[in-house]
Length: 434
Image 1 (cartoon, rainbow, N blue to C red):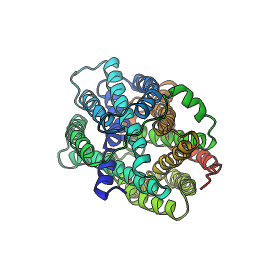
Image 2 (image 1 turned 90 degrees about the horizontal axis):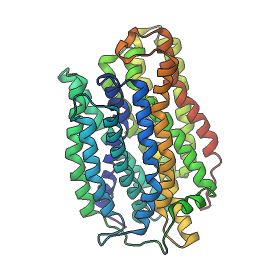
Image 3 (image 1 turned 60 degrees about the vertical axis):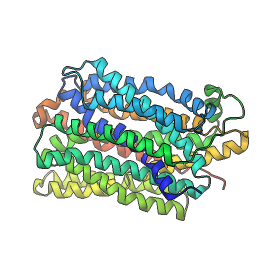
Image 4 (image 1 turned 135 degrees about the vertical axis):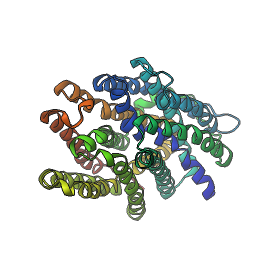
């Protein structure tokens, strides 16, 4: 049993997720599209390509982690390697060294960011199998890890909200502020974890061919269910994140509150996370994930009805009503993800007992490989649809055509609703033998 301080130090490593997830789709992609003039279609394609090429690194990294420990343990040296990669990409994206960046500049920055993030996150997932050996231990440790992710997402997104509220500064200042914060925190958190968290030195009994390991995972029914559900969840969340600023500014017409509304959304997620964790401990992980998907689907649909049939016609209540809806939906934002990750940990333990070798990193790389498809399409598909099927131009703001704004609104609302609806039916099929 590891100490609580070691658990917290491990969970804090998920700070890299806060830097590589929502701030990218909420601020960086629109920033490069609008302020640097790359355009929505180009940015959407670059984001997709960056994530697509990064996909091929997952099985290789998973095998390397499983097969090659160091004298410090199985995982620590990989975390140490990921930190400078993440810092380099942070400089490129948040503090651009080029005042007129090209498409290649954005591609390289995103590729480095997600390569470093991949190395860090697969290592963290594999490490959790050693740190949390029992069913409920995994639930507690990985929900703590997700709580850290949401907290730092909240903190990172609070920076532009603070700048917006007190300094009325342009978006460039907001993004630079985020970048400096990330550069300071990454090495502090990483070094602390390397010192405080114990590590395993176990390696696989025999060399693992990453692609042969992947082939066996395709026959694992529960793993496929978890992976497909995960793809749908990240697609839902990523698409909303990519469109959030545009929707708040141009459809809801609340541009002066955009950063604070996004902040409110993540604040509610921290509160909701504790409820879903306790529910998982009371029943089990897959049932809790099932109920969470039902909740998000229901709240999203009811919120759509509230916006469409009342708030849009009564703009004096738009701010209050929208904040209430953001809170209700946000309560479940962090509910499903840590449960799915913990479920893969349970499956990795079963796999270890069956094959007599630790393939946890390879199994987690299987999950992250396919989640990247969801992440890539989450931001790129809405941008591409807007660029191809409408004349939506971010620089026009509320002066875009009615058809373009309606398409923007429909993508923001219905992509998540459809994804969560399918997830409900998928997770219902999960069967785990205790």
